[in-house]
Amino acid sequence: MSAIAPFPWIAALKRWWLLYHLGDPRFRFMWDAPPPDEWVALDCETTGLDTRRDEIVAIAAVRIRGNRILCSERLELLVRPDRRAVSADSVRVHRLRERDVAEGIAPDEAMHRLLRFIGSRPLVGYYLEFDVAMIDRVLFPLLGMGLPQPKIEVSALYYDHKNRQRPAHERGGDIDLRFATLMSDLNLPQRPAHDALNDAVMAALAFLKLKALA
Image (tube, rainbow, N blue to C red; front, side):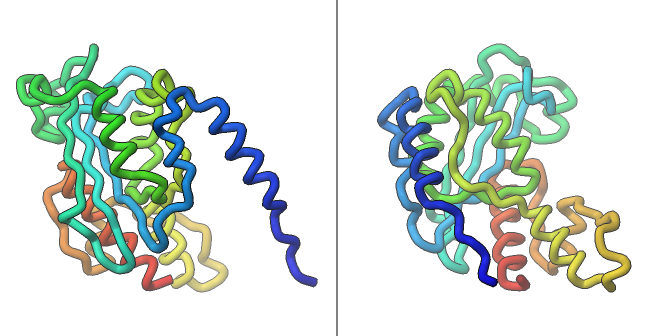
């Protein structure tokens, strides 16, 4: 017996409901059909790891088309935090000082530029949930909702890939999902980590390699 396809009217109703409640109609394009075989790899650097209080200090995104990473079609934004200071611990991670981010653009402007760069393309990232949570917190006052694009988690793809290689009785166990481990195991070039553009490009490389292996 064949599986029953999901009712298309459910997706259409959800799209209508979200567009109806969209706070800024200029961003209706996010619900358009995405360009075929395109994605956007995304990464953020922040003042810390608390998604409720910390703020974004840098965003980078790069487009993927087919099996190519389009480094000429990239977005790099330095973002000026509204309230949260850049801690010494976070500076040691991403090397962005208080005086560096003071020259950045306002968070709202960063969101406008990011949304236009992404369009309706699905998002790719390494531990993307954190980046999306940070972005959504800025977006909600502007749009009344967060990023609607489909999201592809590279560490989940890698977990599935490694799990498939195990004997059936060993599947489902722990797998080292650290970024450096993942990149090394896939024989991919590594750039210095905790730089937003470097991390976005490495996530794109891992996505393409895992997509091919699948």
